[in-house]
Amino acid sequence: MYDLLPPVFPGVHAYRAALELVLPAVIVAFVSLPLRAVLASLGALAVAQLVVLLVVAGGEFSHAGAHFASHPGVDTTGRATGGAALLFVCASLPLYLGSEIRGGSRTMRRTLVAAVAIVGAAFLVAAIPLGAVPDSLLNTAVPGAAIAQAYSGRALAVTVGILTAGGTLALVVAEYLALARLFRWLHDIPLRTSYAWIAVPFIALDAISIAFPNRFYDDLLKPSLGALFVSQLLVFLVFPRFRRSLPAIAAAVFASGLAVWGLYMLIAGSAST
Image (cartoon, rainbow, N blue to C red; front, side):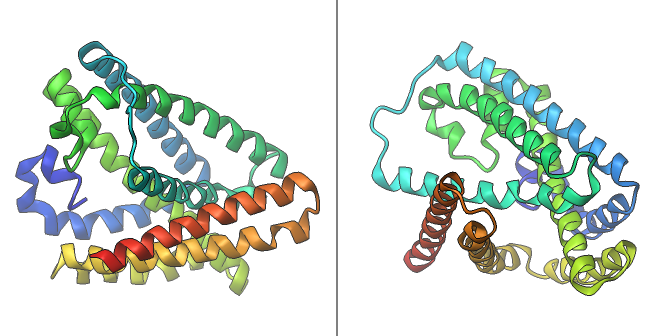
């Protein structure tokens, strides 16, 4: 929130410390609601994000036109591929809800495939005109809001800013739900007890971060991402033991390669800074 809100709402600076304390408490209260209500809210937010994404893409097409990057650099392509590895981390979060959905693994597989296809298509449409968008708009803290401001006006920019911040909070909620279920399985405790276990360090660390928010984020981001890549890599490597087929092995090799590449790019970026 420290990075996303100020570029769109400059006046929020005076309330940043209060938001840093209030938002974690709101998230803890939100995840304690019935799961159906939580998932319905996240789904509504996702639909709103896709709709606004396509609206912004329409503004890009009308003002900048369609233009693919003609000579993407090796470094740029490598970093983009490493970033794509993070999609595996995010896409794995719904799997923690597999035992609670109607239809089990079959419903989960179909939902994930449909979600990836729909979101991927929307992102492709929005990415096509980016090659013609000026760097002055792309190299901003919230590029989507900057593009919306330049091509459509303040109202759309505010909408993009709110949905961008909301998407970040939604990811935190998804991680909270997944971690709570993991703790419940590991320690055989009630789900509400698991929620409470996570809430204590979650709120406490947010309070500590107020003293040095930017450094707190920067110092912990790369170790956290590294741990995520390693944990995902372990899952990918052992997956063929549970499903011994050529497609499963190929998928495991591909996913492991992406995770290794993402980890390498993370370490290489840390060494160069």
